[in-house]
Length: 297
Ligand SMILES: O=P(O)(O)O[C@H]1O[C@H](CO)[C@@H](O)[C@H]1O
Ligand SMILES: Nc1nc2[nH]cnc2c(=O)[nH]1
Image (tube, rainbow, N blue to C red; front, top):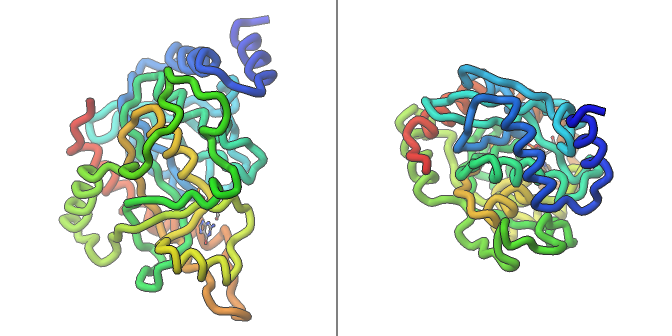
C-alpha cells in the first residue's frame, strides 16, 4: 500500500483526531503544493467564485486529502485552492462542510487546525445568511462583529473534548473574536468602492440546521440582537481563535427570514445560491482589496 493509502486508511479509523494526526495531514498537503500561505479563506454557500481572483492556482480536491470532511451541499465545490490573492499567499477553501451533513463539529473544523499547522495566522470566513435585521436587504454584505453560538447552547462546540494545549488553552476567551482593525479596514474599503448602501456590520448566529428557522425562532433571534442567521462559521471561528488566529468574517444576506406567521413565501437554498451569484463580483473585489492592504505576520 502507498504511504498515501496508509494515511487515508489510518485517518478514516480515527474517532478522536489528535494534534499529531492533524500535523500528518498538514504535512501531506504541504508536500503537494509549492505555496506557503499565511492567510486562509473559507467560502460560504455560492461564494466559491472568490477562487476566480486567485492567481497561480494549485488545487487539491477535499476527497483526495486523508481525513478531510467532504462537502455534500450544492454551492460547495469541495476544493482547496492555493495561490496568490492581492499579492499574498493564500489557501482558499472552495466550500465547507456543516454539522447538519452529519459531521461532528470537530470534523467540520479540522481544516482550520490543518491551516494553523501549515502556518496560516489569519482566517477570513464567509457565509450565506438570512437577514433577521429588518433594515437589511437581500444582497447586503454584513461584516461580522460578533456571534451567538446557539448550537453551542445545545452542546455543539468543536472545543468539547480533551484539550491539547499545543493548539490552545482549555478556556479561550471569545469577547474579541472578530478583529477590529480588519473590520474597520473592510468598512473603509467597501465605502470607497461605492458599497456604502449595502455594507453593514452586525451579529451572526448559528443554528445546526438543516431546516431553515421557524417564525418564532427568528423573532427570538431578533430579540437577542442577532442580525443574520446561518448554519456554519461559528465552529470554525471557535477553533481559529482557540489556536490564536486573527479572524475576520463576512455574511452575504441571501434572503430575508420569514418573520410573519402564515405567509406564503418560504426560505430556500436556490435563492441563497442566486444571491451569491449576483453579489459574487462585489465580494471578490472587496476581499481582494482587504487582502491587498493587510499586513500579514
Ligand atoms: O453557511 P454557508 O456554508 O454559507 O451556507 C448557508 O447556506 C445554506 C442554506 O442555504 C446553509 O448551509 C447555510 O449555513
Ligand atoms: N439558518 C439559515 N441559514 C441560512 N443560510 C442562508 N440563508 C439562511 C437562513 O435564512 N437561515
